[in-house]
Length: 201
Length: 346
Ligand code: HEM
Image (cartoon, rainbow over the protein chains, first blue to last red):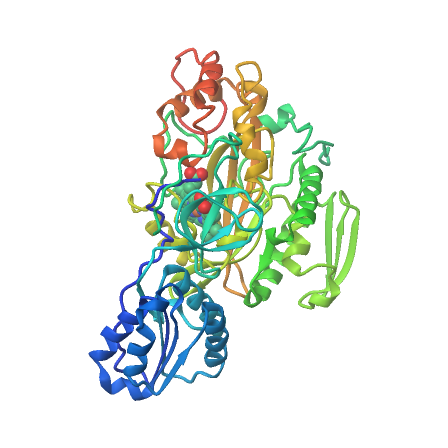
């Protein structure tokens, strides 16, 4: 098992741009992702009357991005109190989405991953989702041992919030789970834990 | 002449060992004194009698014990066997492939009789007698892939092909060299091979993918892959790494011959007829260092391989902690004489 960071399953985010061909635009944004949405749609204001924006401020609550997004005046603007509630609404919208709808996801890597994972069961090809990473580098990590998800992981190693094992974060990434893989760091020498590195702030 | 199935374990007291015949037919994976990744794919043709490739599906003396170990793994962790719903046709393809091959080549142990879609399967070593309707999942006690792979040595992955890409969309994975089906299921070829060092940049993975996209029905292929395992443990899963990882620190100069194992995977790939999916079999063979050196050519060659192994590969395969001790043990059996080309014993 390699801990190096040249693992090829690590996702690449190409950046948001508005798809001129789309009939509807469905935007899921979190935290600093609001700025990516504002930049992209300011360049294509005609698209806004066919656009739904779902936004949760998360860690950027004090920044006023929600007001700035609402000021874009899209067809629908929904402010969600948390990523989880945003995903509930997104799921319903995906289930009724029509052909020609373009999905956008922007915010932290964990949030983008959760949006993509939500869309896959609806037959949305992940290549078709426009993504831009903004804000913290925090990761969503699945413990390979107990399968528990820990959100907002900023450092490696960290303690699994479910089983309590100390895990290092691999760059190996599953789109289905929307998560990186966490593996016990002291399996070979119990108790010997390398220093914590804040790699994903 | 039927096989004599051994009573042995791959956990706890680790009573696994190979008979002299099993050692002789071990799929030693090195055809020269150095090793590097390559596109080592060849046609899966019948090999010499009694060899591990005499038949497309190899059943050996460890069959019953391996199936018992698989059942234990699944009891503890059912996530080792998973299939995405669109793979059901491929699951039935796999039932056909394995039952036909096993009954044809090992008729004293397995038999299959068909009356249209009504099949009758008998597995004598495991004491199973099952009548079912091919294609009707309700007539089997488990989903089709799980049913048949609980009765066949080797891990199996079912691979879907879409848009010129392969996706690992189902599998029975209980004897894996440290990768997780639960994490990898649904991934593309490029994603699940993500952690492999060097091979991507050498263009090996791209060439192998191109080859497999064109895999033809009726023309299976195979390759060998290898790693090493401390203790004859089949279940070296990442799920249980926090339990077995510590084994790597238990090797001593006294026990190295018995504890350290070469772990070879005979991997074969078939294009399936109904689903157009690919089945990827990963048949794991274990051999202790003390058994390996009973073949003089292998005893000479393997320490040379270990000495010259690129550090990235040693790290990836998890050998770092016990590689030097293993080389030291093996060097007693290397008199420096040249080795003949090819895999087989002299
Ligand atoms: C379609 C069938 C195949 C499947 C499902 C498969 C799956 C895998 C998996 C799960 C791993 C472990 C990755 C990890 O560390 O997480 C792996 C390793 C690897 N695979 Fe494949 N593989 C397939 C075919 C091939 C083929 C045809 C090649 C030929 C070049 C290949 C070359 C490799 C290599 C070189 C490694 C690293 C092995 C080591 O050093 O121990 N694979 N494969």
